[in-house]
Image 1 (cartoon, helix red, strand yellow):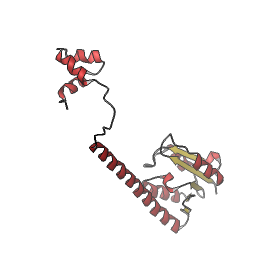
Image 2 (cartoon, helix red, strand yellow):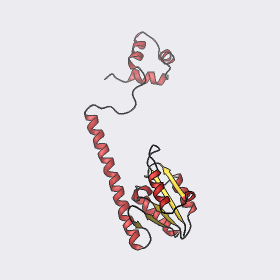
Image 3 (cartoon, one colour):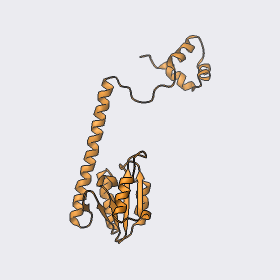
Image 4 (cartoon, rainbow, N blue to C red):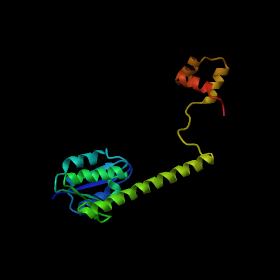
Length: 184
């Protein structure tokens, strides 16, 4: 039985150190640690893909927490089935559960559904906050980089769209879009 470790954080600004240190403390060798710095909403992650290639029957994959392997229930179940079909067990250190045995697989399925429901609640709260902010007049997105008033002023002076585009260093189509869009 060989031990492998998998650690994931959602963004490149987050640190993997806590997860990696916990996996090493459990006996995972550094050359058997696989990591990703991206969302767990899909299984097409480089570190996870490499781990899937490296493990063999009888191996055990250690993961600090259930939601580090993934967030989507269907993907989690598929991953667990894939590892199970290869004869590879997964142990979640903080959750104290393993895919070894029938009971372990049932618990993992239930917990992955809970992780997905939690992610859905986070998205709902985020969207509710965004709707509320918009209602209060908060504007989202990139600030306009083109001076609409300048385009309209040059047009009022009789300048053509091509010359306006050249002078402001913008596309002619952008000039036409501004001229067609009614002022607010």
